Image (cartoon, rainbow, N blue to C red):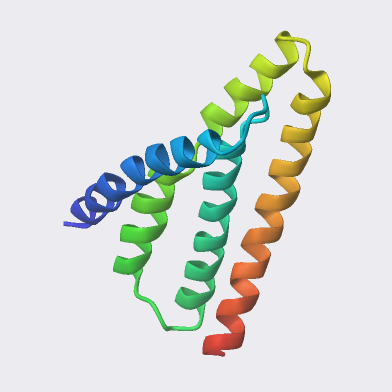
Length: 124
């Protein structure tokens, strides 16, 4: 039955990713992939919060499957990040390609650590 939690989370995460990406990208007139950046960093924050909550005993392994594996798995996208970074480099926007790679890793890790710290502050 665990697979059903992952499926339900993914059913929410995938359209949320698409709609968020479109809404964010529509507001920015630049080649930088702000939509993908936003969903990936948001997913890192959610996963950090969730991990901290599970470690503190405030969330169950079922919630982890639903939100972590399902929702965040469908919300975030490493393949699109890779493709958009490659596309930027191939189109001659090397600065934006490098900025996307560095900022995504730094912001993603920062968001995950921040989420875990918030969870620890709330439930420790």
